[in-house]
Length: 373
Ligand code: GDD
Ligand code: MN
Image (cartoon, rainbow, N blue to C red; front, top):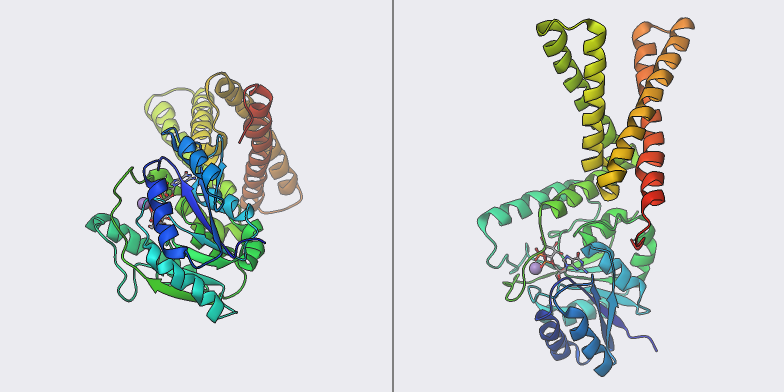
């Protein structure tokens, strides 16, 4: 018989906290049919040995070791996918979430068969933010307000990492989730196509005792990516938008250089144009490699090859651009429309071909080492 509830605990460097959080769960969930699965991203602090010991001794404890991967949301999704239970509870390992609320959250599903989600919230009733600094409280509140504008399902704490959901909701949403960053609850709610039935459970966010928080700038960027992907992403792929932004920055740089080299420096127009084009291409490559394709970022020898290939592709793109614009102009289309369309076709060409060749094919051809992703 599958357990009724699987508690999913993502862990990264939480060696000391693992036995403590397990003890707390044992104390409050005794009456339920439950199991816990720790999803650990190959922490280098000896967590694996602690987990192995617990799993060998206790039938209600499981662990998933993810090698070569990082990410709170992705870890939670993997934990849910590994379970056959009817309910999934997600909770942090660091004892910041109040486990004594968990039984009430689970009971709510018995009481109310149509319930989709039970969410632990810091912002309503007697919930609170614990000892968070004023700065982090403010960031958290602003981010929460932004989400409220986007959410179909009203939640007072959509960034909560403490919630219980029904398996059906997971099945409905798992294929559209972004699976990036920290905001797994937000990902589920934004990926669902209907208004969800939710219930909120206030609690006081506790202070972390062991280990440290993994929230950093990258997690913040991933959060913005999630919001953009779930809103504008339906119209324009986020990556393409980033690519176009990088291209616009290249255009600015190009004009700036023309001002310096041609207007001020007195270089012949063609020479200045060639120099500005080369510099703008390199700058675009650097930005795209650092931001647009950061997940596939090229380094070392592959970087040099990638840059060369990128410049060749863009040169071809320029030909495609000019040819298409010229063709349209010949057909009597107004000059500005023909020109802009040519530039757009060139941009799509550059994007499509460099995505495939520079940031997909090249790295996979050259990486002879471990391909585990
Ligand atoms: N497997 C895995 N992989 N686990 C991770 C990773 C990762 O890359 N990063 C963090 N974790 C685990 C931590 O070990 C911890 O158990 C839990 O995820 C939360 O991480 P913290 O680093 O403690 O996050 P926080 O306290 O700053 O953020 C909490 O509050 C946010 C509210 O703003 C979390 O509950 C977030 O989920 C929540 O959104
Ligand atoms: Mn924490």
